[in-house]
Image (cartoon, rainbow, N blue to C red; front, side, top):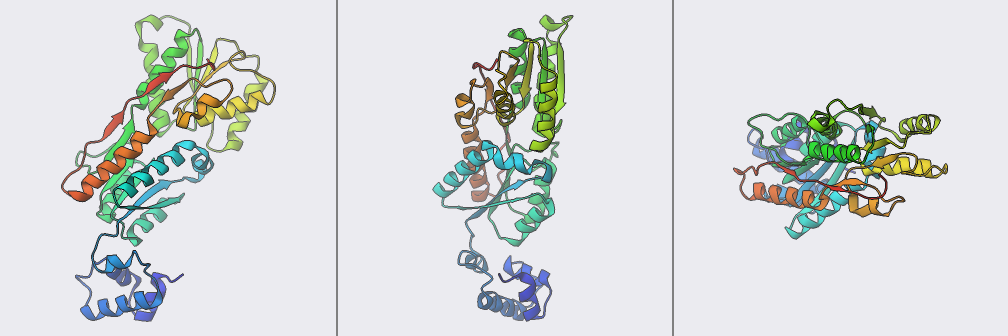
Length: 340
């Protein structure tokens, strides 16, 4: 595969100059150099058919959908149906609008920045990034950016439209349900106390501030399960050693994936839920929680709506660069099934 470096060597210019020509940033490049580099780009086959429109200063019709699959979360991201469902909806909606999706995932944030700068995409949809990283991408690429589930603080002048979720409300609804069911110890279990897991934990803590729970001997604790399946299995084995749990103990997992993982671990060892203890999840992804045994009590979010709104907002920004649609926090609902 031909690289920018190889073109630069043939042309006798820097890689930055070649990149500038590719992206149409030629104010400081002589016409002779532009012509020479453009000729080599076509001759050496660097630009694919769609990319040729970039050299004619047309829209590429490409939208980059990116995920920062951090080393520690890589396995979880690839196996969680939330991501597959979201990406599928985004691709379908972009196609309806006449755009093509380019998906890119990397554990290295700098690699993602590099990809955005190398490819002349029209816009970016960033999934599960920090708001500060989304703003950096917007600043570097000078292209519209819509985020899904961005976390962290945002600046007052932010040009990022985020499609998020009322995660704290989900944590609150589930924790209140578990205490109302008679559970006296509720363990909120997540990958780590960070990002959306942290928001769900904050919502759970609000329950203990309610007047009806004042003075009662209730336990609410966050457990960091770890970010790899191996780390989480260590905790599962620790749970196994501590059995029997009181029937008044429940584990609220910050994703259905984590809850079903625990359910499978104990089912293989002949331990039944909710007889041993209660479990609950978060997401209700594609109904998967409906088909496990027992059926999983969970918090439902509309994953399809997230993808549709992200595309809608991005297209609005592409059609009118002065527009930045407001960020949204979509509602959640409690779904009670037989695991609690």
